[in-house]
Length: 195
Image (cartoon, rainbow, N blue to C red; front, top):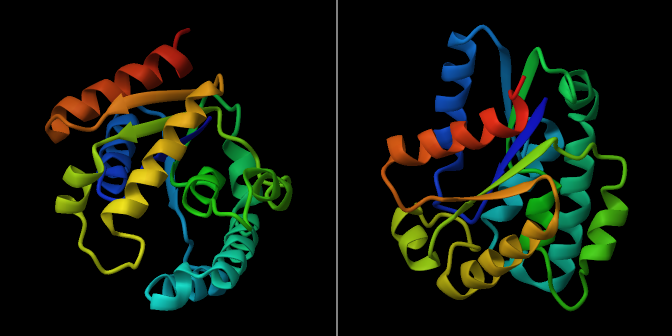
C-alpha cells in the first residue's frame, strides 16, 4: 500500500512518517519511507532552487514543477512495488499533490500539473495534515522562501480542496505529537487494514 502525508510546511509530516514507519514495522508490516525531493541529482537541484529567492517567480516555478515531476519518476518503480500490496507499506512525505498546492499560479494550473505527472502512481491513501498557517510558521525553520504567511495561507486552502478525492482524509495537526499520531493510525487502520 502507498500512503502519502501532505500539508503545508510545519504540520509535522516528517515526524509522523518516522513514527509510522517504526510502528508498522513493529507490527510485522514491511514498511519503507520516502520523501520529496529525493536524494537523486534532480532532487538535489530542487533543494538548491528552493533556497533561491527567485524561485517564487513564474518562470522558476514552471521549472520547479517540471523538476519535481522528473524527480518523482526516479521513484516510480519503487512505488509500484508497494502500491495495493496489503503486506507492504510505503509512506511518502509529499507527492505530486504538493505541486498542485504549492505551484498553483496564473501560469501553472492544476490541469498542467496533472499532465506532467500523469505517469506518477496515485496513492492508495492521502492524509492531509491540517494546521493554521500562523501556527505552522511558528514551527517552520524559515530557510525556504515559501515559508511565509500569505503563501502558506493560499497553499493550505489548496490542500483543503483535495478533500474532494475519495482517497483523501484530513487529520488535524493541532494536538500534540502523540494525539496526532494516534489519529493518523486510526485513519490508516480503518482505510487500509480493515480485514
